[in-house]
Length: 260
Ligand code: FPP
Image 1 (cartoon, protein in one colour):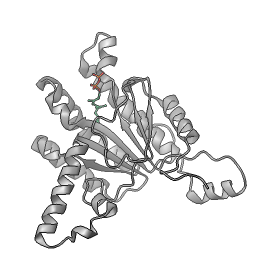
Image 2: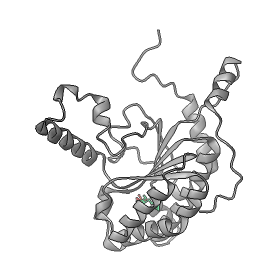
Image 3: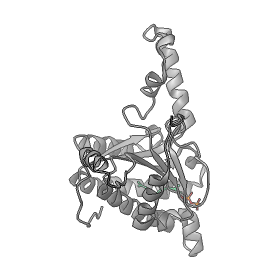
Image 4: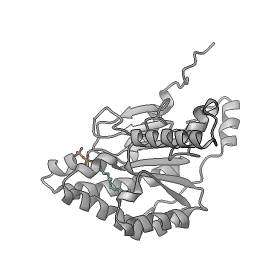
């Protein structure tokens, strides 16, 4: 992965607190940014190119986004790279997408590692070819000690399936006598999801103009700010990224409460 731009250190929380106390305007970055990368196919068809060209250009946008996230001091970046519904696409396109994933894992994890990125995968990885499953586990192991940026890649991921799996785990624990149903609160349930230990997203961006979540982080998005951008994912760049963070700063987050 070509992260050629010199990387700035993330602003420390204490700097933000000090600046706020001094009455200065401070841009707050979302701690966790999640992105539904949509529009690769349309980008390609507008140019008379095969869909694979759109997905390849989408990988370039992933590189730009990783660089911008590190420069902004974002701690968590989740990318929806392959939904559980994407298996229903024509076999040739599924092969293209899994091929890009294989290439990414084989050729770019070393660079992610060198930049201090920790990679974690959510979703049903058992549906991928065995070699991809092995590479995913190796990439997670290799980067497990990094803490500059947590990159969560959602692969064969579906929010409803994730919630059902957590409910089943809770039911089985209750039947086995290891969980008191009365003790199952929101925190305990969250710990059964594939995102256990990952903070909820603060901002979810979807590109391509579509305005829906498409089964992405359904539980975790309860209080996320949603931003739908009229840009196709392969065109998403540093300016869109900066504008998205500026828009996040204009939102007033109340988490259901009302100011006194
Ligand atoms: C949506 O565009 C995008 C996808 C289904 C795949 C996203 C994958 C990548 C950007 C590359 C792989 C990423 C990694 C991390 C290896 P679409 O095909 O649904 O576009 P359309 O709605 O215009 O048809």
